[in-house]
Image (cartoon, rainbow, N blue to C red; front, side):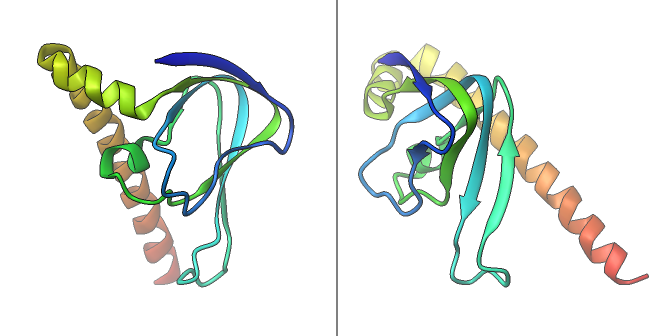
Length: 129
C-alpha cells in the first residue's frame, strides 16, 4: 500500500486536474510547491509551499474528484506514496482503523480550513483600513 520515493527538483508528484490518480503522499524530507492555475483565480497562478512531515493529495482522494493543484518538488524530496484505492479498501474492511484514519484526516482538513479562514480575514480586514 505504501512505497518510498525520491524526487528531484522540479519533479511533479501530482498534476492539477488529474482524474485518474487518487494517491496520497506523506512528505518525509524536503519541500514541495503547490501550484494552481485556476482559470477563475484573479492572478492565474497560486503558489504555496509545504515542508517536512506533511500529507497532501488527501482532497482528491477523499472527494474522488480531479486534483485541485499540482505538487512539485522544490529541491530533493523524499515522500511515501500511499495507494489511495488500497487505503480506501483497507479502511472499509477495517472500520475501527478506518474511523481513526478518517478522523485524523478530518482534523487535518479542519486545521487547514481554519488557517485559510484566518488568512482570508487578515486579507479582508487589512483592505478595509
